[in-house]
Image (cartoon, rainbow, N blue to C red):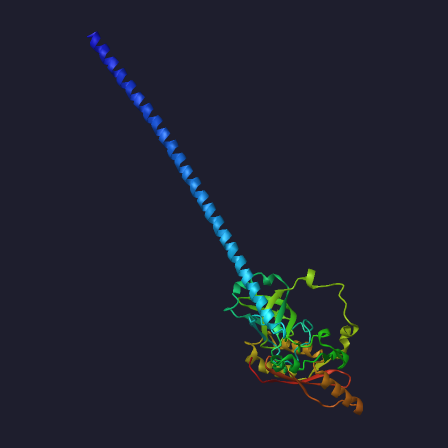
Length: 354
């Protein structure tokens, strides 16, 4: 009996030993398989990464080569265009209107000769969204002013620009309003009549709304085509040591003595106002009246008109009753200028809905 019990006990220990041995072998095998699998995966990942890096490098090199090819092609095209047109300098560059101005100035007459001298002069610059996405304006509202590059589309001599230079009869000198008609070289002035009818002005950015910019201090007539808008940068756009001729500083040559209104002017304007209020850039008749005063604080007559009037007054030594007109937002404003240079605003009539 003792022998059988001993044999059974031995058999149990043998079974347990075999089981433990098998378990140890299985565990060792599992660990080996795990590390082998992990190493294989790592090798596979390294290989994939190297392939992707190689592919990326080849793509970048291809893009760089294509870019260089495009640049060379563009340079060759410009060179060919210039060589073909060298004699007459008629190279054409791609320019197109990207925005239109809706201004308080309905006509050229009355539009300020320079920007910012009429602070209440307002306009809305609206971009063509087919050319300029509204997102292009993001950040512009952080600037106080902007530059506007535009076209003098109402010049009366635009047809000259289509003629051969020998037949265009472009004037080398122009009459300067501040010098009572004395002539200066074209490029010493800001005359709108230029070889290329392109204007440059600065305006105050009041707000940016969608694809439009509300501006003030403008010297732009209604309907002006815009070519570009750039932010005004004081650190490089304002030159403290800049020098100008003395005649440019003669502001009093164009300033008038005073601007007064007839007794019933405001009442007449107020009567018209409900018709214009929804389309006007101004909030009230009083504010619009202030615009008129600012506009007429400068002599807006042409050089020839002013010289003619002054000659007639000096010969008779009395003021004549010449009635002048200025059209603002579709209102026709009539006024007179007295012998001592004061402006008397007589009446206002609604002639056009803008």
